[in-house]
Amino acid sequence: LEIEKLTCKGEWKEGEGCIGPLLTLITPNGGETLCIGEKNLISWEAPVDLDLINLGMVVQSGRANLGQFRAVESVTESGGGIGQLDWYGKDISGTSFSPGDTYRIEIYSRYKDEQIIDRSDGLFSLQYCQ
Image (cartoon, rainbow, N blue to C red; front, side):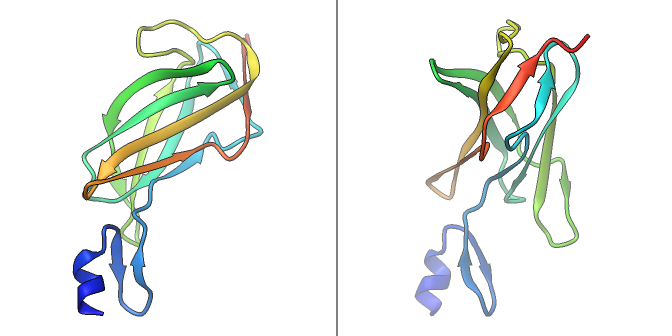
């Protein structure tokens, strides 16, 4: 048990053992319609001691980089970290994505020498809403 605790790459919880490492995309998680050029919220849960996360947009034709961001903005009552980004439907270069309904957000980082990753559970749409 002590060896498992020392080698845990996630979070150790008494009575539960090694949990994670966890990086969880909260929103958008599928089924939403986001507006190009308007403020949309991307939010995630991350280990509180993680510094940076990377965001990408996954489409059928490939992946586009959205940038690298601070992993944790606030800490929940249970001790988890919450991060968020106001996103306007653009990639890292400022180019707007085209309207469509086959998008997913991907969030990834390295934590304790392991790659951690999550993405939207389902597809969401991007549209011009004005």
